[in-house]
Image 1 (cartoon, rainbow, N blue to C red):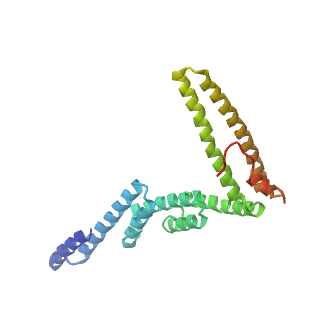
Image 2: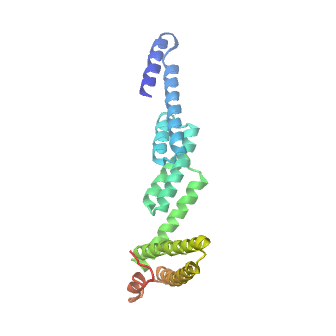
Image 3: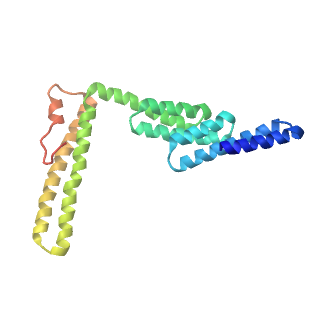
Amino acid sequence: MIRMIRVLTVLCAVGALSLGTTGCATTVAQWIVRERNHQGDLSLAHGNYPDASVAYQLALKIDPHNAHARDSLTQVQIRLARTFFAASKFDAAIEALMLASAYSPNDDRVQSLRNDIEQAEIKRDIVVSNFPAYKLTGASIQRAYTQLKTLNGDILLSLHRFDYTYDSADLSRAIRDSAALDEEVKRLTGRLQQYRQLVESGVPESAGENLASPASLLPLP
C-alpha cells in the first residue's frame, strides 16, 4: 500500500504543473479510503472485528463522512459489544457502543443493546449483593452438567456395542448408567433450584457451604 501511495504521489507531482494539486490529493485520499474499507471488509468477513474496526476508523480519519466506513464501523462495534457482553465485560461493551454512537447516533440497535447491558449491570449488582459466591457456585454447576456427557457417552457406547455383540450385558450396562444419569440430573436440578433461590433472595448463614460442595455420583473438579 505504501508503495502504491508513492506511485500516486509521483504521478500527482508530474500532473501538478498543468492540473494543480487539489484534484490529485483528493484522488490519493479516495484511494486510501477505498483500501482501508477493503481491509475492513476482509477482516469483517473473517470475523476479525478488532482489525476491521481499526481499518474503518482509519478510513474515517481521512473521510469522516464516508457512508460505507460509518455503517460498517457501526456494525463491527455492535458485534464487538455483543462479544464483550457475553463475556460479562460490560465496561468494554459500553465503550464499543460509544464509538458506534459517534458515527450512528440514532441507531436503534446501539441503544437497544446498551439498554440490555445496563439492565444486566443492575441485575448483576443485585445478585452479587445477595450471593457473593454466585460465580464459583455457577461454574461448579456448569462443570457438573458438562460431566454428564461422560455418562451419556457410556450409554450410547453400550447401545452401539449391542448392535454387533447382541449381548444383553451391554443393555444391562446401559440401564445401569442410565439410572445413574437420571439420579445425577435430579440432584443437579435440585442444586439449580437452590442456586436460583440464593441469587434471588440471598444466602442464609448455613446455605453457602451446602450448595458449593454437594455429594455427587460424578467426580467434581
